[in-house]
Structure formats: structure tokens, C-alpha cells
Length: 464
Image (cartoon, rainbow, N blue to C red; front, side, top):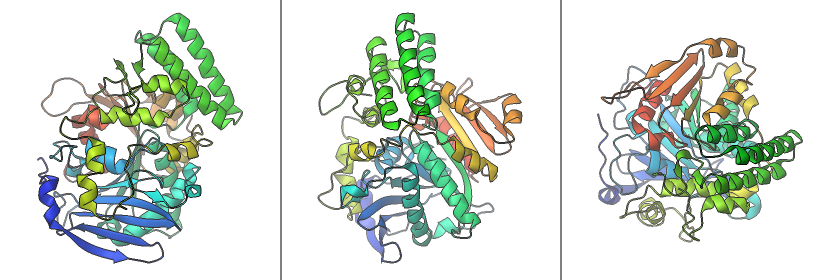
């Protein structure tokens, strides 16, 4: 059954102040009069503020026979806004026209969006020295946020929490997942970690980078001459990663993407069937009119490609930038007036230069060793975080169930009334892998039906 939501313009009169708290982590929380939405700020460090937004599912039963799950969505970039992009362009209750989304994940779980790390979206710092420089620093801030949310969102104490991430957000999910698991085991956090899901996630740059050339050769976006040079460039990236030359490897990786853009007819690295700028969720820098793939060759931010890929989904009547700095900011009321929301913070991206290319395979292994459910899902058409690359890093896991996992056949998955296979899944114990057909980097936007079905399975939602 579709979730019914009033257009945001009708919700505006219903707003009321729910609470204002100052405690161990200074916070401010407001929401709708009926409590179906809560949002606020948590000062995770002095002068460093994280913004969050919680939606209570209308399908949550008052006395469910099974616990109703909560999904905490972690956007990538790094520096991309989950409160904006993930919410209004992928899985939230409303789209950029502020109309109901038929495929909202709110049908299967409560949702929490967070603009993380600090400086992303509506989150902000009062001093630029407070930007995080590592994934683990992000995890520390997010843990402070979670501890505050357990008090602010009453359902969290009884609701299994699932960390679901996309793109660079997968590195956040891995580190935060480990931090949460350790805190629970130490008795420092009273929640249930239901699982961690990483979608098209940048878990191991060393494995993704060499996958680009063979993939693009196989789909005729590169020829052998360009392929040889691209392979050489990819090998340079790998050598620099092995040597721990993190910033240099990121620059070489950017140069590789620029070379691929030039030789592939400007292929969209989020969907190899398309050119940059064509994807429905691409890479035209609206401020300059330049192809972001070409800007990448000048070592611009990959994160900006990410934002514009999603931004091209905006309708003629509304844009994500327009609503986040207009109607949404007006609704929320607590966003500082001088704060301008942007899809991706370049400052946040740049601050992670020495961590961007580091892998997080060990963190995934640690989660598996605790018995926590880990799900990997990947879009078939993605290049930047290709399925081949995801398969490669999974095969590096030291988890004792890996051999059995790899030996199992996949199961075909279908969706609704549509014909044909929509995905494959393989599961063994607490590791699950979904191959999503016909999807690029942004699975929920490209294949909303199977993505909704998948999240229902991951969370074991009573509504599934």
C-alpha cells in the first residue's frame, strides 16, 4: 500500500515546537504537531553541529508483533547532503515537487536522514578547522549524534537500527557500524544494531580503480589503445595506494577519470549506458556549464558529479537547490538564516583528502565477526563503484564464512507485476550480496521497485 503524505505546503501550518534540550550534547529538536516528523541539531563538538531529520512511518503499528525497523541513511560525496539528496531524490516520502513518492522506503521502516560530516548540507561548523579529516572522526561525531537521538526519538530504543549507505557513505557506515557495535558490546549504547548495508560503496578504491578499463572495454566505451593507457594510469593509482600516498593516489585517480571521459565520449561514470549529463538522477556543472568529467581532469571534485547526477532529476517546477533553500528551510525554521544549502560541500570533500583512498574492508570484516548482518548491493551499470570492484573487495574478506558464501548459487528476484529478473541475491549466514539489474550508481532512483523490496528484506520489515 502506498504511503499517503500531504504536500509540504499543506503541512506547514501544522508545525509546532516539540522540545528544546541542552544536555551532554547540546541539541535542539522540533517537529510536526502529530510527532510524525522530528528534526534538529546536535552540537557534536563545540561549534560543530550535525543536522538530522526523522520520519515515523504511517505503517508502523502501535503494538507490532515484530519490532518496526529504523533506517539511518548515510549519503556519500563525501560532503553530499542526505537530508536533501537521499531524502527528496531517492527514498524519502516526498520528491522535489513536494509530492508523495510511491516508492518511499517509509513503507518499510522509519527513516532518519543526517547531513554528515559536519559542514554538509544543513550541518555546519563555526570554524573551518572543525571539518573531519578521517572516516573515523566522522564516526565519532555520528556516535555523539546517535546517543542524543536515543533520547530525542523514543522509538529508537525498541527499534532495530539499520545503517544504509550509498557511495562514499559506505565508508561512513563501516566505521560508524563498528563504533556502534563496540559501544553496544561495552554497554555504552542501548540500541539494537539490526545491520549495515552498503550500496555502490567506495569501500576499496584499490579494487574499484582497476575495474574501470575492462568494464568500459566490454561495453565498447573504450578501445584497446585507450584501454592500455587507462590500465597504466590505474596501476599508478594502485602503487600509490600501496605506498600510502593517499593524496597523490586521489589526484591520479581523478586524472584517470578525466582521461576516461576524453576517450569514452564522456561516458557517465554512474551509468555506462549514458553520457555525462544524460542520466535521470548527470554531470554538468550548472555554475560553469562545463562537463564535470572534464573538470575532473583538472582535479576537481568527484563529489560534484555526484550531486549533478541526482540534480538532473529535478522537474521544471522545482529544483533540489530551490526547495532546500526555500520551502524546506522555511518549514524547518531552525536552520541559520545565513546558511546556504548546497548539494555537496567542497570543503568537506577536500578535508578528507588523506583518507579518501583508504579501504574499509577491515571494518566490514569486524562487523561480520560480531555476527552483524552486512549487505552489499550494487547497480549493474555503475562504473565508479562497479560490481566487479565490489566482488573483488568482498573476496578479500577474512570472515570464516566467505568460502561457503562464494560457493552458493544466486537466487533470481522479481518485482511487482513487471516481467523478467530484476536482481540476484546470494546469502550465507550474515553476509548478503544483491546484484541489481538495470541500475547505475543510485539504485533507489534507478530501480525503485526492487530497491524497496530489497530494503524490506534487509530490515525484515513487518510490512514486507
